[in-house]
Image (cartoon, rainbow, N blue to C red; front, side):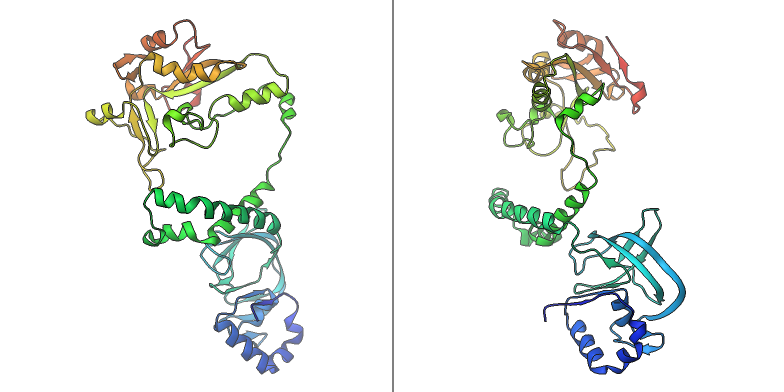
Length: 385
């Protein structure tokens, strides 16, 4: 036998028979304690305890179950594991429900159950081979989609990961728990299952939905120099088009050709996460010039936030001009963190007052508007022109 599923039901109706069947109770106890993968829900959970209404049960688990005379923790729930176990790493989530008049002296605390009204409780006895608790699990939820997603990621992992690890001279076996994360198939599966559940909360609309709104905002990804086709900074790029390419193409397909505003946002200095070329960083390093940023605290996944001054005015405008060329958009620019630099833009040629810098980069009226942020609050944003 590969596994055991003890579903719900009404074991109290057969408590005498279950108690008398010592052979079944003994064999089940031995099998589970020997590591047989087991799911025991509600009545099955009661059967694995010491007693049910005073009748001896399997004794795998330490609880006693009795009738409360009323419904206990009734309704649909979302269950989330708090530790690793039978279903993989912690934070595995299932849909489920509880419907029972009985309660037990030890319902476990390995999962958190949350109802739609916000009420929550701890539940489930849980090990590497056992799930046992009152909640009934809806195991089929998203399984086909999750399986397909999982197989695709496994394929990508097998083709991409070995070469990437070799290029970085990394050995997962020497990386402790992080190495386990890289190679553990359960991590991939749990990710796939969660993504498929999340997709149920999203409505995908056709591009034409844009016509239903007076104002539409497209939010860019990363910075212009990290665009996937900017070979000058390869290979340290993001895997997307970070400028106007996609929104411009979408508007073109919809036949929308009215003028649009593209707001390019920059600090009064330049920042970068991760590895790769970063022009003029050496200037700030030599000066010991860094800035406190509580939203970008160093962590092991992306390292420290790096800082550098802006290049000259032509370098400042280079990627903006390239991005808007031939598009429906006209550019505006927004300077943030102005309060950190005393109203100056930090450049390769020295610190320049913001007004003076705007005059340099906006020769010929490149920018439609110039926005300025000198605080943490959106309502404090001002318009220079």
